[in-house]
Length: 406
Image 1 (cartoon, rainbow, N blue to C red):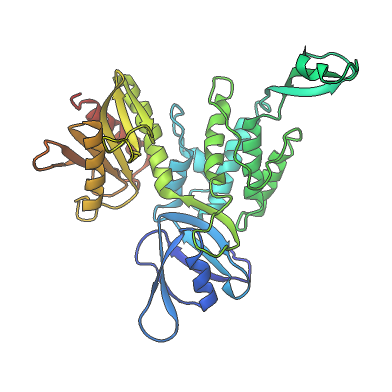
Image 2 (image 1 turned 90 degrees about the vertical axis):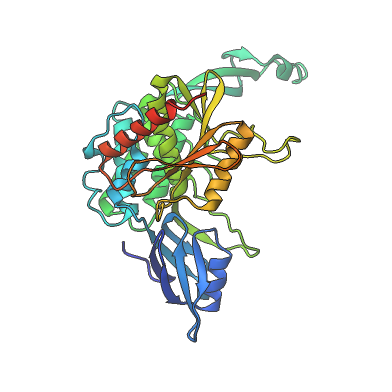
């Protein structure tokens, strides 16, 4: 990807040992006060060299200004085609290799993702722009819809205009606002090919009635229904693209940021949630993601947030924690086991499961915890496999989870 001159470019991979670079003190301050995109470690010796390593995020982002300007280009560890599969797969839609054709061979994520989004947006819009009803409060010279009686009485007897409320059939609905916002965002990001940029502009021009989102405003909420089902794949992808549109600094000094970043831990968690939800439905098992109403202590002061809680007949069946990490030697870290053990203890479950994005195979590795009777099982989901094999592995995992005793 061609980088715009100015900030010092640093290219690294999302995980691994990182790269060593010489940094100006102002650039060090920029990275320290920026969102958690990389880990910064000083290298012993002269020269002001630092090791910059990834934190499971990918993308292209510019940080800071002047002497402190840095441009991070963080590559995924997975091939771009595999990552696009995780991003664009929608449950209930048969996977087709053509969905990433032309992008799959690209070495850079951003142009490939922009192309994939343009294709998904075109598929959504080709049957026609989705319309829906929105409630409008207005004051008109004629009655339309229902009169807002209380507002009209406050007009101190003036008959016109009339305070009314009516339903308007329009394209200016949340689904189209989210779709349009992602089109605009990708169009203005560096590295997107001219061909894709023209396609994005052309698709945006098909939504002239839609109100653009103002920077910093929350994404409008939309609810999946039968009517907007053809929009669902592109909207799911749009939400990922727009998640980090306002990168929030975590340090004491604000840092100017601009770019696109994907949190791959969240991507993996969402993919696992969606695929397990579909695979467990025939077993009568419901999946709840980020279940917030559980507490660790008796006084209910310590909240816990398991990635996935599985329910059968309204009662917790088991708990699943998604880990976008390699299993290394095949044994989960003590920290991961402690975390899952706390979930099982709080939910009174005899078993829990860790699912790693690893390449250790699909054989589950159980760990029975002393003096508790709780068994914690580690599973590896190899994301480097072809999409059909990944989905088959998820199905096998779902069958295993559904067989857990209640």
